[in-house]
Length: 171
Length: 230
Image (cartoon, rainbow over all chains, first blue to last red; front, side, top):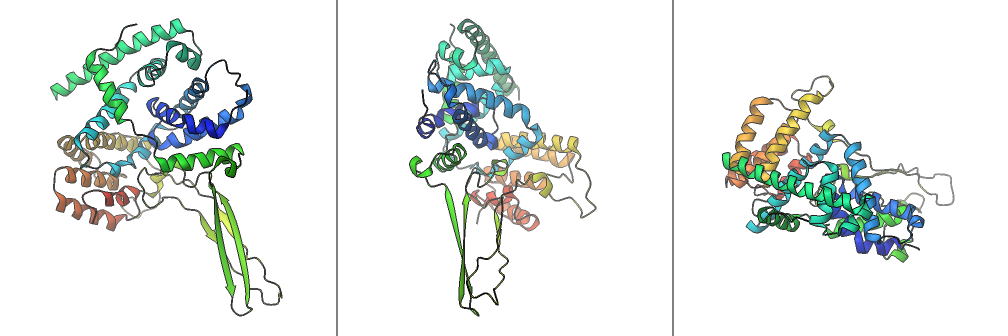
């Protein structure tokens, strides 16, 4: 089964971009990560036999790239890079956008407090709305394990939301 | 399988909406880079990923014209390690130096020699000014990490429009890092905070001070898009 890289890029780049961001790849490194995902796709295109969809296959590649990037780069440098985006923030943004941006930032910080395994299934299920079967294909674990991890991840997320709200009320 | 409670569900719904989308210009640039890396014909892929720089050198004394065509693949025109998300002056540029050696005895036009230096990644730590122009010393990583952490807190506050929190954190930063290595970045955050507090004149004044200290600092450059931009 052959893969047409340009059309794969056009169809799935938004999915890959969002997924990498939500998996915790710093904003400043997402472009590199997207590029790496599609280059891996190109290199390994002959391995794709169609057992899963191209989207889930790409998701699996993105998971590994994200994990490598998180491990391979110094935390301090990430933070420094992220600081460089600061003046993009505009205090004059409409309130709804601010609220959504705030929600995104908060959720990212909550996801940072989850284990990598829980974060992965949570992001794939709750953000990308993939099925258990698709998540199992991407992560390489069976559907029962995915289900169990997802249940724990949801509990964890709810607890983090609750804790965050409590802290906010106290302060 | 259990579903999320309504509070978490609502938060996720907003976070989905608030996820930064892939900017169109980044999509196009990345596509070119991926196709180039994959060895896919850019014509077939429907994009142009090559930049052609034509330098015409006119040697008036000999009446010769040497034209140098440098085709540079735009794989990573600007490494993302320092890529700003807004369109601002690039941090990293490719330099093309062209020492023209005017041919004196050569009857035919000759190509000038040129060197194309690939873009180099610049780590901003090195460009942060020291308090005094003293002999270079090793950066105290622990101190820098602490500074970063503090600034990150300020950034979160400004990101969410919590200006009072940002103000408190800025005060804490100043108290702890009087001569911090990231004080220009902290200054940029203060400009944003002043904007959020509606102190436009103060924001402009501070921005001008920052420009005087470090005009090419990306954080300072990007303040042009804030309320302090003039």
